[in-house]
Image (tube, rainbow, N blue to C red; front, side, top):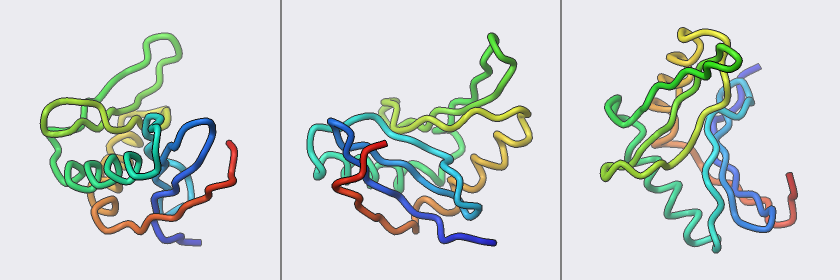
Length: 115
């Protein structure tokens, strides 16, 4: 079953976002923000940076032999971190999905949701 990719804004002491994929899984999570407005600006930066392959820093976790990525802004600040993947191919598929879907993804807010 395909889902519509979307950003979700969550409140857990701070405002955080996560990007859910077409499979409904979280593929990118952002840092904590003090305000909803700042979180939305962070999402806007993700949307602007997502199409550029050079903004994805591909990483390997040595401790558990898994793969992940960090999406960075034009000035190099980290915008979001991916989930962990068991292969570099799966990581590349996630990067491809973020780059294709993030710029056009809607934003949902769960103001009372704690994760």
